[in-house]
Length: 116
Image 1 (cartoon, rainbow, N blue to C red):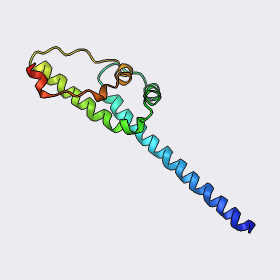
Image 2 (image 1 turned 90 degrees about the vertical axis):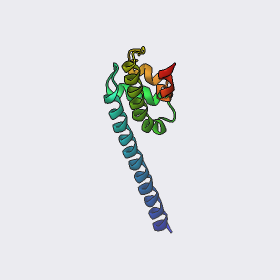
Image 3 (image 1 turned 60 degrees about the vertical axis):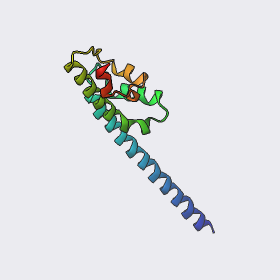
Image 4 (image 1 turned 30 degrees about the horizontal axis):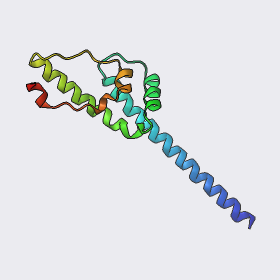
């Protein structure tokens, strides 16, 4: 009976270790994805660890948001370029911390704005 219990505990510990390792790998992958976004950001920014910590502290669902950051940034870069080409005002880039704190990845820009 005692041997079965030890095997069960040992198996549970092994499963827990696998889950922890999978979570660590997922978090490292997400941090690497965040770093791609951070490096692509044109405005002023701090180091990876400072920006990542700020981002994760401000957003409980940060792991769901990270895949949206780079596409949102690329959209904003295109939008700014199009506005500049037609002579419209384009503000300076925000500091990345501000961009994150104001959830600027949720901004939606359209071609219709060019006609306004």
